[in-house]
Image (tube, rainbow, N blue to C red):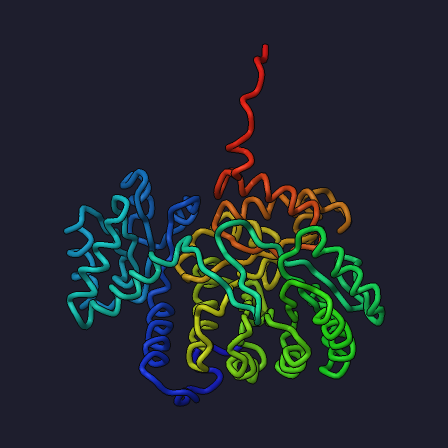
Length: 426
């Protein structure tokens, strides 16, 4: 699909300095493509395209390590000086355009401030580095219509309602509105924070459907759920026409598997409804990557640039790296291994590994209904790597597993802190 120049560059439809600043920030973030190589992303360090890729590993204990690209010659010298002034070190690629930065905890933030204070050309780099570092693990609230979802306190779960006849996981409910509503209510009862309704199968090899067919499947279910559920309703679609209609029927989140890079009207539809949130997912037509996570990061930055150019605020966006979309099974696993690198996007992460064929392959050909444990394993690994939302079919089982994982990875629940001292053992 197209790059950041598609849809064609044009003046924003809404003015103001804030919009101009948001576009400039998104474009700078795309250019430098900053990715953290700490917090579980050690494999990323080994793959970093620098002159001495193993050098960052022993440099820092409990510190910061990031990789960035897009450096101009007049920026590189200032970057090295700023990082070393704060006790850090740099490793430059032979082409001078890429670098790994490493320093004690907090030192890269200080280096970024130094750069920002220098003004052009270093100031743009300093601002991008500051935003990338600040975006890691920051708690925020996602507005979905009248709903406010707190991110960072506990992992949020998006429950899947497929109203297709050919879902890969065997749970398609096309034409049965009552069954779809019952499923959605059960998922909410099991702990779903969002219900995602999809009317077009996206399994590998599936045939696309036209908007009229997708609308006929989706609209009755969204309309029924909007009147019944107390959680946000998401519409899983790549078509602007379907998104627009679903929003009119009560959907407050658009889950676009092409991240605004498919239908050229999608960004305008989302922009026209400022109360609606967006999941911008990564997707490609093939599986060829120069560097898997660097390329995913760059593509997602392109989605954020398109959003900014149309006036969609970054605060409205969740990013999804697209597990199972345009990736081989090995690439899916590498994505999870290196998921912390996407913290540089500065947006909440969603991962949707539920019942995917990669799990079946790992489990000796297990069918979708026997992939629950594998789904839970990937969800826990994703949360440990920084994901805030997971998209799953088996909400109850995943909720129980993540409650335990969250107690370790996030905050110990108060009821656990208040638990009585156990009796003597042994």
